[in-house]
Image 1 (tube, rainbow, N blue to C red):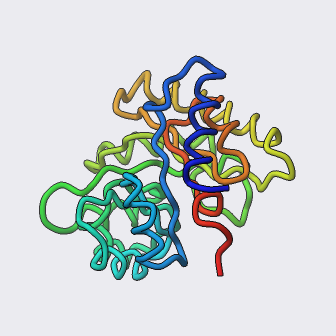
Image 2 (cartoon, rainbow, N blue to C red; image 1 turned 90 degrees about the horizontal axis):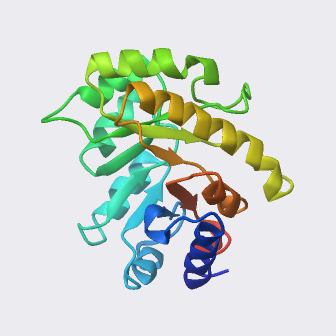
Length: 217
C-alpha cells in the first residue's frame, strides 16, 4: 500500500459509517525510518508523525521541519519523559502516576496525553484495565494532566474483524469518560492491519506505519 492508498481507504471507511475523513487524524508511524523517508510523506502535505522511542524521536525532530506534529506512541519510561516533552504534540501512552509526575516537570504546562487502556487485559501490555479508566482519569485530572482521550492496542488480530469488539468497548469507555470529563474526546486505535474497522467504530486517531512506509528494515 502507499500513502495515497491509505488516505483513500480512510475516506472510504469514514463514508461507510457517515463520517467525514477530516474527523480522523492519521499518524504516520515512522519508527526505524529515516528523516528522508519522513520528508517524502511530509512533502505530500502530511504533518502528523509518530515514534515509539524517545531518543529516536528527538534525533529525527532535529532533522525535519518544525511544523511536524510529533505523537509519542510507545511505552515511555518516566526518566525519559523530559527528552520528548518539548517535542511532543500528543503523548498516547500515559498509564501511571510516576509517568504523570515526570510529564508535569519542566517549563509551562505539558502537552496533552491519552490514557492508554489495556483493552484486551493482556499481562504483557501496558495500560490500565478497562475498569480502572474512571479512577485513573480522576487522579490524572487531579494532578493537572490534560487528558484528551483514550488509546488502545488490542490483541494482534488474524483478521481485522477480530479487533471490532475491542474497538467497540473502547468507544463505550470513551463515551462514559466524556460524560464526566468533556475533554476526553479522542480515540486513538487502529493500526495498519485494522484501521478501517477502527474508523468504522469511532476512532479519531489511527496509527499507521507499514501501510504508509512499507516493511521495516
